[in-house]
Amino acid sequence: MKVIKKVSELRKIAFKHLINKDEIGLVPTMGALHEGHVSLISKSVKNDDVTIVSIFVNPAQFAPGEDYLKYPRPLEKDLSICRKNHVDYVFVPSAAEMFPDGHKTFVEVKSLQDILCGAFRKNHFRGVATVVAKLFNISFACRAYLGMKDFQQLRIIEKMSKELNFRTKITPCPIVREKNGLALSSRNSYLTAEEKKSAAQIYQALKKAKEEFKTKSASAVLKNVRDKIASIAASKIDYAEILDYSSLLPVSENAKKAAIVVAVWIGNTRLIDNAVLSK
Ligand code: AMP
Image (cartoon, rainbow, N blue to C red):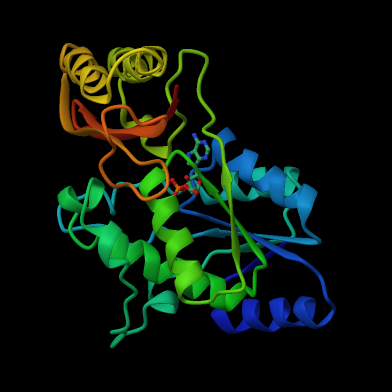
């Protein structure tokens, strides 16, 4: 496994693989790797000739006052997880390497970037789309593996990749959860033991919604979810919505398939989760 810090070096190596007709898989991450990330890595290792994992806490997707500085960065542990899981290249650029002084080019996915998380985190998805576009260009990946955990991000990157004609096709990967249902997240390390118990109840609400959606209207299901999450200790809802699975537009009352997406604060930690609903 090779650790690469420079854009020019990764580009050179990836280009050689491209010429060699190797299929290149990319797993973009912010590090603090857990089993959710490992599930993406394993898919790439299985499907592709070459697997590149990027570890980059992207300053462009954090607003002032968010957790950019305190975001966990256990690099040695991450590298050993990558090594154990047969990754070929780990790309760990500095912020200055990805965004040198004077960087002024940004990618925006207008219809999707300002709703849900985008309404609460200004410029977040502009930062995400820009860095992922750069990673697609640098890595020549034919496939990128993205978790359904970040459902809005997944839809934004799919749209960006299609509309900007990237060669990179997106492979969505299911959410990996703890036994109690809590979706694995690098931010779970901020939670106290008590808060973790509260956080696990978010998924219980989503699970109930999955059942109820089979027989109830979308608005009735949503009301119950909001009530249930509001009753969780130390919780504050940023949003809870039932939306079209592909477009993230509002759904009709009797839609056959939808996604329920939530962002909830537990204490000082903001968690997102979602579930697919079907009749
Ligand atoms: P992050 O490091 O949080 O930016 O996540 C990097 C990638 O891993 C994204 O595509 C996430 O959606 C995905 N991911 C994070 N947590 C999970 C999880 N619990 N299950 C599946 N994928 C995940």
